[in-house]
Length: 416
Ligand code: CO
Image (tube, rainbow, N blue to C red; front, side, top):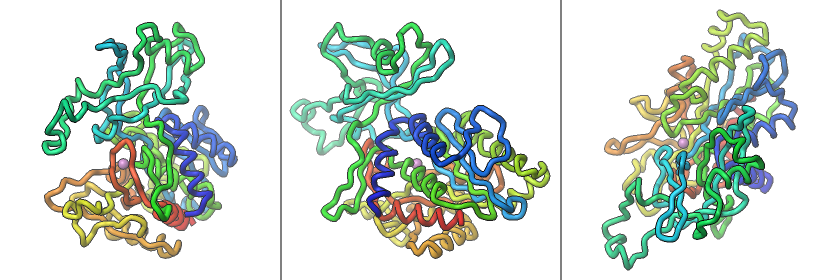
């Protein structure tokens, strides 16, 4: 992986503790590259543009022959599992001020223990304005019980009560501000202006290249901000072609995608139709273009774990730094078909990068992605792919740096 790629993905990961921060970061990049912001206006003729709404964003570069060549879409998700702060979170216990949290998605709960945690989110103000905020340093910690008070933890495994054991302590001073007052200060506003807060914890540890050979990237939120980075940087580095190039990044995948801005909502379909309309393609013509379109749904895959090889089907299990994986499930938990797989294999060949395959063991339930949802909604042939990683849904995950570049190059070849 080149130094500039590592710097660019690390900058994105460190700037994006929440899906809204990620969308703000990407919107800024797109504006700088002269993509027109249609978030608050109707989509009109433009070479390239984007629509951002809450934690989701769709960006595109118009093709010269969309009516004949359709859309080439790369999809990914912006959210990651973790711990969100509840409304009325303030509590006092045994010398600590603590915060009440709610679990978002399916995090590895143990991974949030003994970390230096920051808090980030957004506030809705009386004026209707929405403001992002984040703490500049660590302010909270969920401490694990000492082994002397939990003697069998290493043999029996760690058992956490989801309601009782996940509250972070964030002060030992009774007089320190309540949560809303603290948030007001972070958001540079007055407490009385705040109508509602949406906040979550994040690990303040920055993205770091590790390994004696510097071949691994460790960070929070690699699932799935790694795919968001590959998709957006591929789009930014491409030039216009015959088909319209689209990147669709959705919030709420980790909780099932059923939301106004999730992949099960109308965001992508509406935006594609608006793009088609701006290119003077009729509604009937638009439906025709969908038949000629394709979608690569990018979401990280499980790499073979060196300590647990028995958890994988080793005939179809990706190895770190040997290329992005095509994810296959005949029960359609992944959208990949033989035909759509061939599409991605072709893109990898043109990009001169390796690819691998992932199929889960029959006795191991497999996850799902936005791929099948997009395929179902739009009837577009879709392939599920992803960078292999370890520790999926941990507060700190790890993947191979070469795989990030390989996915980015394959997506560029797909757009071309
Ligand atoms: Co994911």
